[in-house]
Image 1: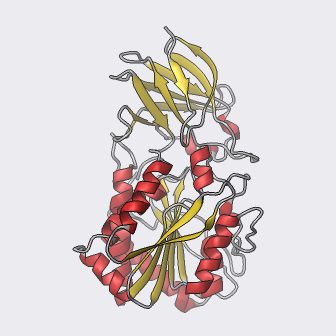
Image 2 (image 1 turned 90 degrees about the horizontal axis):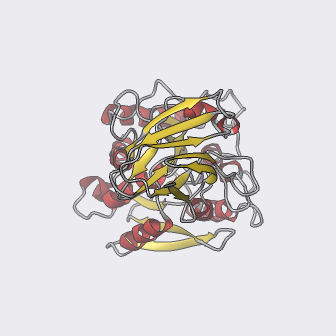
Image 3 (image 1 turned 60 degrees about the horizontal axis):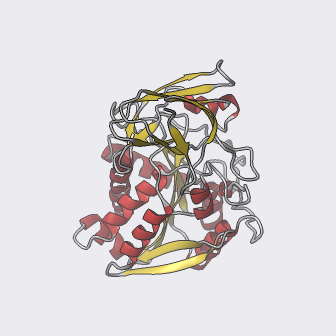
Length: 375
């Protein structure tokens, strides 16, 4: 009997070309009104005890084709614990084919580019945090599809700190990071949270792009707009999500901001800074470098050897959040990138980079912020 494959659910994305027994030929659907595609999330039913062979083709034209080399697909049979399936990539087969092999114990298995973070779980996260003592909820605005841009605010201090995530919706590790951060920040017994709340006013936005998240997009909002290229001139018509965020930041000011993302190709955790902004100063640059050094010392899962090329003087792209916010506010701004693959410096053969490790890294980032502020 043939297996069944579907993706008509929150963040689902796959197109079925052919099913034969326990094998299938598949394609990834493009983001709406966009050329981007890379995120997949689908369910296979009727597969208990059968060796699945799932072939996703046409990947040489995907957003980040180098991301498929050394990549292993995420798989779960309970939608709670996500392991990695046997996976290979052949650039010469069917326009570039990712082959996933897995034998489920149960009758249903879910496969995804990374462990999904559902909109329902997002609402649970917001509700639980908002009910915590000393935490205020604020709706910054609404997405193109009418979903709220949720912000949680806390702290009695004067230093404005912003933590934002998931401008690119397929980078779901970013919201797992946010869950770890909020669990710490909302814990009245956590010493790091207590110090941060004494010194800072924290503004936490766990999901900047709820429309793209539920639609199963990799990189864009409902209109196919890459939000992290809108920060120089956001508009209500194209990017109301960024407009709402930037307007709120104009109200509060920004001293420190971390924008949390995921990277398809580089098997490591790293930071990207704001080198090349017009108002660059060695003093501000030293503040960023000091935070990187603190985090590298505190977290075995973080490193500084691998990362993105550094922009030359005056060459920074001000449409990106980190560059725009450093330029606009003189903020110590940074983009945190986590891998879709694994951290090759500290690999986990069973799970690769995972939700659990994303949450733990968040705690190290917060502890590093405390040390940075004390300096």
